[in-house]
Length: 395
Image (tube, rainbow, N blue to C red; front, side, top):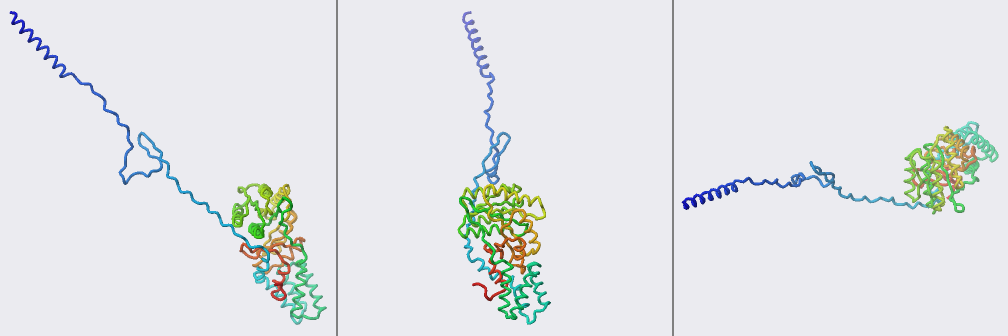
């Protein structure tokens, strides 16, 4: 009995052990979430790779890559020219002047050298002078004087006639007028030159050429771009200044011209320059408001320095219309000198006589061409000799 009981206990024990093993064998295992991989930007094939500039984007990240540094372009500094000195410039340009004016002199000499000088001939002399813009009044006075002297001499030798004509022309042009251009500094202040005139006369070009001539003579110059109505005028003056090493004071288009002029003069005083040249807007002489503004420019300048020269630029081809312009400008700013431009392209040089006679203001400079050095001091004797051609012209 005890043996059976032992066997039964053993069987029960074995059964329990078997049941526990099966439980362990078939127990469900714990499941772990797979690791999360960080997102990666999509990769393009090698031949489709995006350039390494700009912004790269995907669904989760945006990366900005700075562009490669661009090479710095060198600043081109214009080469400063060394202008020739002004001494002798008028003599060098005499031939050019003579080519345009000789027809006037030849016509007069031919008429006065005729065997018979009747009223018809003297009328032709008058017409020739009037056509050359000498003016009716000066022409009649000159012809009357010539008629008297020819009668007294009783001779019409070519040399004598030329001498008489030369003498009368010099008297008309005013060989004894003071044509000094006041551009030298006085004390610690520079000379100030105000350049005025209507549109199209070559005013800005004259300003640049004058600066070039003064620098050629060893002067230090500041330019004031007070023509603020045209950006092109300031750009043009800037080009002139860069060519010869003159500093240009300018402001934005539409700025107050008087303030530009004031700043230019202040700059000239601070830098201790010799001459300040102020280019003004080309104003139509019929517009009173603009002419008043020109007077304001002059008054504002005078708060800092004396205005030594007011140069009125006239186109020699405009004839008597140029004379009317001169009269209006003279009333506003007290013109001290005339600059005649485009004198090389016309036989109307008699405008020199008309302007001076009406205003009592001398022609101080003449423009004889398009070249940068084609601005010269006016010399009455050289001018008359050029009109009459060779002969006793000065060397």
